[in-house]
Length: 466
Image: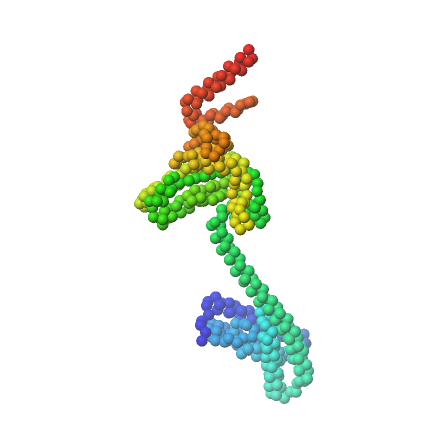
């Protein structure tokens, strides 16, 4: 026993039934028009019986759908919503009998009706339905002829039926082919959708292991921009947690992993917010690129880097406060370093494993700056400072020899962002000179030394003219 249909299925079936009933009314109107034009000898009472039978069949169909009785019938060659063989087929057969001389025209209508089944029915369904309609018609013809004492031309009727069934065989084969192609296409589309969902799931998982800018470039031009190598002026950023090895020795692995993951989660969010490219995580360290693979003005990349570093330090204070309240035994301090320069960027590795990164001496400078920094300190090179001098507060630490580098590097300690802008700076520019001074940051001895240098230059220039 079938279960009651859902409201959505019931509504769909009732809509189809009313649409079918509209078809009966159109057919009745067509028959009436054919009679008026002289193409049909249907009697008024026959047309009335036809309309009444269609209305009764429609009412029975609606009642079956409303009460859920249609779910008890499984066999239906039309794949329609109710068992039309029991109700609608006899009505159609009687209508075909009643139209008289217009039967050939009605056969054309039937054939056109089969075309509307294309893609929804199979060979045996069409052929069996056509045979069933014709058998019903012959039965009605024999019964009605006996009641009226008539002798129909059975040879003509047999030829008409044979021609009709022959065309139905052709249409059935054609529709069966269409239905097969539709089924194959539907199956192919379902497979493609499943593959698409699978690829989407894999891409979502892959994006967890690859930085967002790299994912975007991989989807464009087959990733050609990534698989090559180019020289770009970029800003390289390194950060590292101080005394991390000591901290790990005093904490449970699960507790340490939870704290480190929370730290990385917040830091990586800040990297993405400032449009940096996460190059790699190295234990407790982070390497970020600004200006690769997305092109970025060097000054913009340097400033975004400093902004990100300031945001990281502020977020780390929040995290340390949170961890203290949770009773964790250690807070974290981070060293940071950044340098701007020409580096070779691209993919490096083998045909089985690749990594997009930057290489060259400029990367080594940034790494050494991070290693040189004190806990909570960010060091930047003069190359980076020169690009953003008007936008940050920095303390000049002077040239410094770094491990592994042949030449000293002029280093600045980044103290923060300058939110007041040029009002706190003295800028002078003219033929042969450009001076940018930060009085609030310069030490008094440096100011005196600068004044002596300028005075000595003036004296030298005056003496040369005298």
